Amino acid sequence: MDFIKCKYVLVLSVIILGFGYSANAQEYKVKSDASNPGNSSDVIDYNIPNDMAPGQEQTVSITIINNGILPWTKSENYHLRLYDVSDNSRMLNAWNLSLVELPNTVSPSDKVMFSFNIKAPSTSGIYDFKWAMSQDNDFFGEYINNKISVGADNITGTNVYSGSNSEFINSIVPQTMTAGEKYKITVSLKNIGDDVWDNALTNEFMIGSIVESTDITYPGWNSEPVLLSSEMGSGQTSDVEFYVTAPLESGVYHLQWMMKKGDDYFGEKSDKYSVNVINGSSALNETKSYNVSFMEQNVPGVMKFNQIQDISITVSNTGSKTFMVDREQLVLVDANLNPVSINVWNVGYIQLPNDVAPGELVTFKFQIKPTESGWQYFQCNMMTEDGKLFGTPSQSVEVLVSD
Image (cartoon, rainbow, N blue to C red; front, side, top):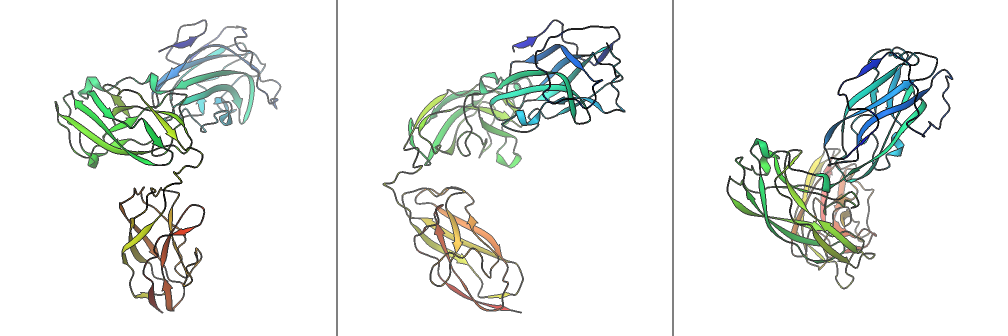
């Protein structure tokens, strides 16, 4: 792994050196004015990686000299702190910590080496790595101004020694996809280690998507791991099938996978596949259509006032467009088939539990709580993300709500 190295060899402990030293290794000064003019510092040495794999842990070191007139003490709340967390535009506190304790008092003209562990974000990208001295919430002096590339190219198998190893055989990946549509992927793997790969019940072994630092992660495309549906013993070769949903914008996107045991990658990476996504801006193929049929519903004819009741409704996607999570939804309607998200049942829009391809069934399971007694009307319909109802509504039910 490449490192940025300035002047000194990395030391894996925190030390105080009691002699005067003055250097100006950094040209970056804290922008905010320190409330205490007696505080000042310079960064004179650091050992920071240029790149890391997602989730990787690494020891880094930063050496700073106290060139102010006040001593730095724990009791006065001096720290090395991330400056500033908002600079990490992809996430706050990206490195699994934002503050490093001062080991002991640092007098004027003394220097201190902070050595601490960081953990890379799980999502690939280019992340800021900026650290500075602070007293309470007030930064002062110079700050480290580095960037670390977190990406798939930096991933290496770390679990082979413990018995987990894999060989990539091949994959079936469509070369062209329509934006927003769902496609089946087949990845063939061989277990060439000693460990048995347990199925999804243990949540231990999985196929993990890996992306480069320049790639963007999309839900359903390259951000969720795939748990194994069946056990794979040592020496066994098996096809793992799962679905991906093409990004909503047109362009060329990449797919690549690697086996994981918990948080650790192991074995061989798959080939990297380039997929051409078309019809991006519309997110849907407009030659296709929405349609739905209600197959079954469990709605009691009698309920109690203010008592929670479990409801289940099963529908079939009889159209040619895939129903997508956070896009299509189930909504209650009145006798005129108008959507009523505020109603006597105390339930609004009911979200899909998963994507539903044409020809597939899906069951909505949710709870209602009648807020008015007497005879009440219950009926549902499917709705697009822009508020248009489609397909056949559910059978209407007249429910007697008793006090």
